[in-house]
Image (cartoon, rainbow, N blue to C red; front, side, top):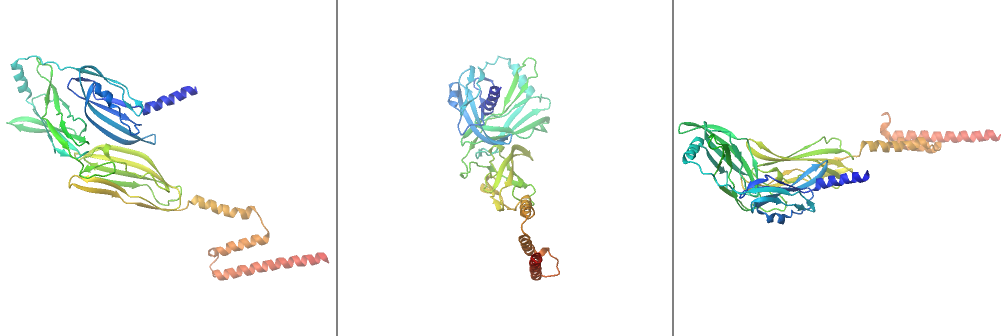
Length: 454
């Protein structure tokens, strides 16, 4: 039974730590490309052994992304690699086992077929097809030169007559070594062209690339079914070819990240900070919003080390959202702070360095340092008071010693006495009464001994 349990935990650990490989498609035509995604939670700074891919594929692009996430309260680090592959030959190919830090992925079968020669059709059919569809597909970029990780907006426009078949499928653009994210939903606008009613469909995509290079965009396209019974095959219409360039960073830093954005905001929220004492815990939520960036490139925000404060990362969230048609990257971190000692402490400020693409200037967005005044715990104070009073009650001494201790305690707390006498007068009264008590006791003892002697 123990052996089965140990085997179960071993298999679970291997499953969690294994290298995972996925492709966007397993059937392609020779000349087309596929995207291979490799992920590992235990890379330890090592990279995949991509040499095994070069036997059957050409690597025409690659990129790497690292991110931090929480798994059952445990902070982990995941690394993603993206490779754009083109098969060298047709047939049944295979992406072999990929190894990252001694963890293996599963092999993936890829079926590659040769392009079929198009069948001969009558010219009249071709004319009829082009006239009946009358669809114009075009694409444009908001700029042709961007910084690493800066957003590039690719807009696809489809202009078609209202009488045409609008039930078509849009194939997004593709760029080797880049990440492409669809933005808002398609927009439809009614227009008139040469006095004929038409519809203009527009849709935008965000393109992110990191390596300094020149990139060619495989254009977006639409696929639609032919209305003619004589030609049941699908028709594909492509947009125009476009390209862009990634220029070097405007400034070099040693921070491990670079954020080109027109606008960045950094905010925080604290839980109740009243009556902080040793052992108290509070939570802090930090949120970073960056316009025109992918959430995967946002850095770690929280400081997790302090000499007198125990700081733990509770939760990490990151996502891409749309605000007024703009892509906004969001990263939110929640940490707990537990105070271990008495005194005044401060947490260092948080500085996010970024490049303002609107003004081409380096900027710093900061959170001011936070100061805390930690007092002694109330429970600990009550415990010390109890420990101080207990010996007088549980360990009786002579009447003289007990009276002396009581007198010292009363003298040390004159504020508890009534307000008829000053502190000096009270001290003299107490000393006088104590002296009379001692003298009376001594006289009583002497008289008792004389009587017993007689």
